Image (cartoon, rainbow, N blue to C red):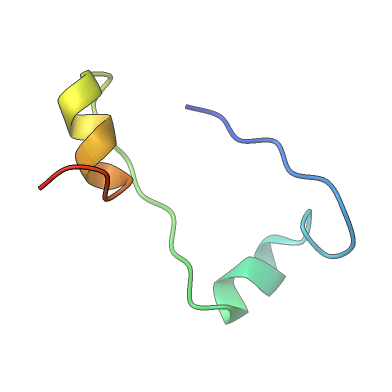
Length: 41
């Protein structure tokens, strides 16, 4: 999945990292993506 964000500061990867967010990887399986997004147990 690719997420495109716009807006003030949202394109700055360092700003998102300071916010406590981390990047993650997942397989393309729907169940794995849902789990990575914390939408499934």
